[in-house]
Image (cartoon, rainbow, N blue to C red):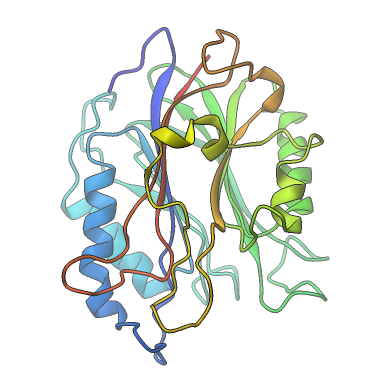
Length: 296
């Protein structure tokens, strides 16, 4: 896909890959058995795409496996500058701000995207240091990147999320900060651990938010794959649900899928399978994929 006067064709893939536990649930296979299917999913679904890969629950050894696999099998994205289009990532372990604990990394091709700025924010009363909110069961983070497309020079804000009010404040901060004048679009992706009638989703998609649910911008008859994004490993006794999202903004510029003055022109929405003929779940979550045109 090539950048054009109409904008940038962009693929966004988000997947909670389930951390590499030493005490797997019933039906869950070790990471060593889950990894091949998951890595092939990432490779196939970002082949020749101006893509971002946003992952959650990634331990350091899993991070190393993902980046090694992407760079060992990379192929040239069509809008890339000359040179090897190796993948890079932003993100840190949530426990110490370095390598300990789960990452929420964002992977991108430096040959396609120039990283302007990035940060990890802890969703707590002390957002700049590794910490847990008083009412949270675990440490929660958001990884934020500002990227400029190397050919079109369009700039966008890319957070991978695990909470709500703090994230909205950060988006507003960036929109009103030094990048606000050049931001073409914003997307927020990840495991929200919230269904549509629960607080995190309703906050992030309220009329006070600049974000819209990408699934709602594509007619449901044109969705590909499953509706639910959390499946479990088959023995949890819980109903599957849609708790993983890709949200697009800013809302203010969005008109209709036929309009000309909009940040995003939706082209497709999919929830991918996480289990095939071998019976191995690559995760208890399914990947969500969005294809969209980012307009200037």
